[in-house]
Each structure stands twice: as C-alpha cells, then as structure tokens.
Amino acid sequence: MSTAATACLFGLAYGDALGKPTEFLTVAAIRERYGDGGPRELVGAPALVTDDTQMTIAVGKALLDAPAPTPGVLEPLLRERFLAWAASPDNNRAPGMTCLRACAELSLGVPWTRATVAGSKGCGANMRVAPVGLVTGYDLDTLAGVAQLQAGLTHGHPTALAASELTAYAIRLLRDGAEPAALPALLRARCHDQRATYRGEWLDDLWQRSDAAGVTDPAGFIGRGWDECLDALDRLDLALGLPDDGDDACRITGEGWIAEEALATALLCAIRHADDPVSALARAATTSGDSDSIACLAGAFLGAWQGMDAWPAHWRHQIEYAPDLAALGRAWD
Image (cartoon, rainbow, N blue to C red; front, side):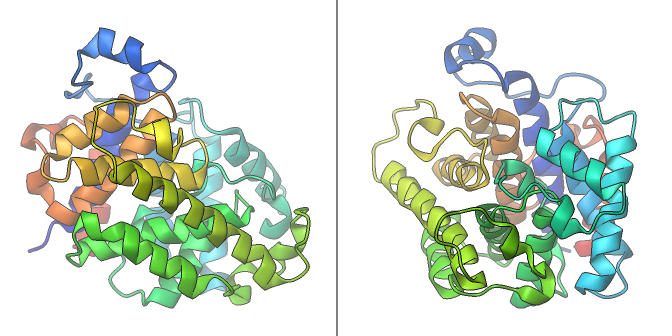
C-alpha cells in the first residue's frame, strides 16, 4: 500500500519541528548551534511543532468531514476548524497575525470574503494546504478551488491563492510519481494555463476587495497572483542553474514569509536534496527566513514523493500530533 499521504503529512510536521527553533536565527547562529549540517534530529518528547502543522491538521479534518467538495459545504467546515484552532490553548506557537485577524472576524459570523485580510499573501495560506493535494477524489478543478478557498478564508491576496494552488498541485504531482526536478516546468505551465481563470464559484466577489492599481476585473485580479508566482519560479530556476555553494537557500528565492517565496525556497531545498530527505529538511531549517514553513513544505514534498521510507522510523512516535497525522494519512493512502 502507498504511504505517500502519511509520509507527506509526517514530513511536513518533521520539517516544522526542525525549523521551529531556528526560525528567527541567522544562518551563522544556526550553524553555531547545530553544526554546518543544521538540525537533523527531533528534540523533545514529543517534538513540538508550530501553527503550520496545527492548521494543516485543521484543513485535513475539514476535508474529511465534507460529504461533498463544494464551496457551500467546505466553507463552514473550514471556518469551524480554523476557529477551533484559534481558540485552542495549544495555539501558543507564535501564530501569524493574518490568521488571527481573519479568525477574529470569522468568529463574528462575517462572510469570509469580508473577514479575510485582503492584502495578505503570507505563507500561512500555503503552509497548510498539503491535504488538498492528497485527496484522491479531487480532479484538478476541484483541487484548485479547494486550495484557493482554504487560503482565501484568511489570506485574500491573489498570490496567496495562486501559490496555494501550486503547492497542492506540486504535492499531487509528486504523489503520482513526478520527479522533483520536473516540478518547476510543470508549475510554470500551470501558471500560464490558469492565468485568466477566476474561480468565481469558489471565490465569490473576493476580487472586488483588491486595492491593487489596475485591477478592474476578476481575470486581472487573479492574473496578478499567477504573475508573481511566475517571478518566484524564475528565481527558482536561476538558483537551480547555479552551483550549490551550501549557502542560505533563501538568498535567491526569498525568505519565505510570503506564499510564493515559501513555495520556491522549499522546492529549492527539496530538489537540491531529493536523494536525502533529512538533509533537505536540515537545509530548509538552516535559513535566514521563515525556516519552519520552508522546512515543512520541503518535508511535505519529499514525503509525498518517497513515502515513509524517506524518514527515520523512530521519528514517527516522537512528533507531536502523531495520531492526527496518522489518521489523515490512512484516509488518503
């Protein structure tokens, strides 16, 4: 039986836990603490994760609860899970302000297109989207709609929507056997193919919230997001075309605080170290930017590609939320 879904979710949590203590450190400080190879062992019993894993589980449970993958069914389920996360006493891992602000509005019953932070394209939109790429019953249109909707509840910027779709699509491709090195070209093709596609049945009138200059219609709104993702993929191609000097992975593809940079830098680490997933996580965690989010996405990518053999067996029983991760994985393997 395939273990791609389980390995994707556990890989995400492993990367999150390794990057948690390094997120606000310089690369020099990380190397001083962990050595040149970066953090390579989970610490703690359990090894604690951040809001990245917590919100991934929230998305996954909402998808499992849904009797049908439609906007009318999924939006209240995602809202319910996000609000439960926001109110949980375990929500004490320095969560992103965009998610907290949007959840505060959602808790008042505000329509999600008004509750969302319209100008935010933070990586909170796509750090949690991995489950969408794992649901076997979703065709690509459904995958795209669900990925954008779960992002849009908190992050209303078009680049947050596009980067979330690309992240989920990358996981689908890897789960289905695509090589990591093939992803930049495949994602670039998706950007061009979807550039003028505004999914109004999923996004309603979100485009009208944009304050970007020159946005006068839905296609112009979403096109801006795809163009910024293409720019990030350009930087990824540039980085991959240079010899790997072992330096900070954020140097060319960005620090990962925003959605398209988190995607590009995580892909850089995953592609550079596709044959050694633990090294990919360590490289992603040894960065000057949003280390936990970069590492969690790198772990999701390589887990979806390689299955549970990618990870040290003893980590499975050490990571926080292991029962939740295992239950979601079983549902989609």
